[in-house]
Image (cartoon, rainbow, N blue to C red; front, side, top):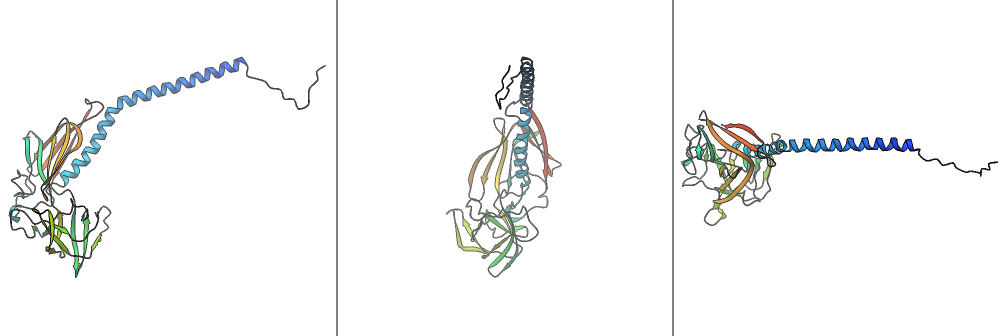
Length: 298
C-alpha cells in the first residue's frame, strides 16, 4: 500500500537520450559559430589591405583636392599687372609671380611626370565687402579670421589689383576688430559678418606687428584674401607630403603628411590644366595599391 503525502511534487530529470541530443545540438551550434568566426577573420584578413588603401585614398584625395583647387587663388601678379596669358601654366619666377597660375617642377618634368611641384595658393580665408556705411561694414566671409594671429594676414583688392602695392611686396593688413573664423558653407545669399570698424591695420614685417596709424578704410566692393602660401607637394619615403611656407610672415610651417603612396606624378595637359596621378599604398600590405587621377585647372 502506497501512501502519498499531501502536496508532494514528483521531480523527474533528463533522460540519457535527451542529454545526448542536447550535447549533439550544442556541438553543432558551437561548430557553426567557430566556422563563421574563422571565415569572417579570413575575409577580414584578405580585405584589410584593400580597406586600408581605400582609406588612404579617401583622406589623401580630400587634401590634394583642396590644395590644388586653391592653386593661384588670391595670388597677386608681379608689379600688380597680370598678363593676358595668366590662364596658361608657366614656371614660377619668384614672388609675386608674373603669372599667378604658375607651377614649378622641381623633380622630373611635366611631360613625363613631375614628382615634386611648387606653386602659390590661398589656403585660408577670403571675403567680400557688400556694404560700407559710416563705421559699419557688411561682408560675405569664407573663413575670414582675426583672432588667430597666424591667419590675420590679408591683402585687399580693388578690381584686379592689390591696394598700396608700390614696392617689391604687396602691403599686408589685419583686421582691427576681433572675431573668430566665419565660414560660408551654409551661405544663404546674405552677408554673414558685420563689423563696427572699417579699419584694417598695416602689418610691419620687420617688427612683426600691426600699425593702426597706417590703416586702410574698407569700402564697398573690396575683396579681402589671406596672404598665400608657397606650397610644395612631393613623394618622400613612399608617402605624399606637403611643405608650406607662409608668405605673410616668412615662416616655414614644416612638412605635413598626406597619404602613403608608391608614386606621385603631376603632368601639364594642354598648357592650361594639370593631371595629378597617385598610386596609393596600403599600410598593412604595401603590395596592395590603387591608382587615382585628378585634373585641375582654371
